[in-house]
Length: 453
Image (cartoon, rainbow, N blue to C red):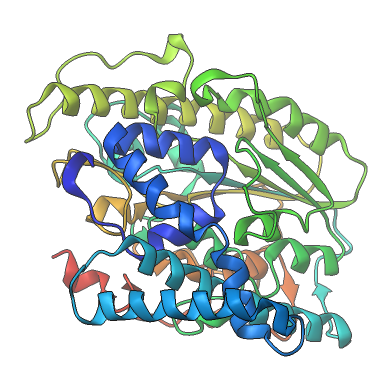
């Protein structure tokens, strides 16, 4: 394994819920042939593990005694893995971690299914207080972009010239972090009711469902391939949208995708006749492999970058990453120009990244693994643009230095969009003067402010 990284359960949650492109690139960037062979040998006996887990939970209702042998084998295997874990014979035990990830994933899914069913069964009032206005909102979700590499946030290179030149018309939040360092974990919280204080509600009332119930037409436009698991967290958020597009380019080698390929889908969504619409645009942004994220004309950074880690790999990764960030800035400017030309009165564009990225700045490493966290893997951009006649909430306030974590983004988007219901809490909205500051807890129990002093 490059960089000698050990994976915890969070990493295997990601593997269970990722898509083919990301998994391929992960293997390419971080592994070697020996590790792949060993991993396959570990996984072969566990191919039926999910069935065994289901058998443990549902035995007596779904499964008959004819499966007793499978159940017995599964229980023995789990007992062995438990011994491995608590005896510390193998501290980073691959089968144990996979078992634990599957079991936790199963439990969480069951809870959320029940919660969402209760919402659908009860007549909960969903209100759009600006229903008399035509509204067009665009939420752009960046990928693996840390604010530490953005000119807009003080980076020494001109990586965001378009945003920088338009900074006077933007609301730029300077101290925003993601709750996790993976797309799966961070967006599962950001786009649902789940947060640190109430993690069980991850996937409860997805943001797409919220807007559907509030009278909006919802669009999900993604430059990612669909996940392996159609029941994965992010898939369950995206699939609630009324119009869905995933850029599944099966013929493309090395996952060579550029976000410019999505611009025509934005045009189509903006032309839709729905009076109220919200467009979620999920970019591939600066996700590794960085060199695949931009066309040749954006290959502009080729000199020696500023870094304390003076290796050829460090220089190459920093340059290609900065090129990817620069191309994302171009895409954002293009999308912003499109919504500016819209005749809709009530409109905004929000840009944030799912999580950050470490690229040989604070650590001799590149990527965004929670098993090797740095400040840059959590630091993200958070930028708003509003139309001249935007209908701000009565309690709106802009505090550029407000400390905020995006596990409460669901509340912020609902609040700024004029939505009201039993679940929207303005004390959790970054846009409200009712906002209550709270500790930003990451990595299950670590205080961000004290961890990265």
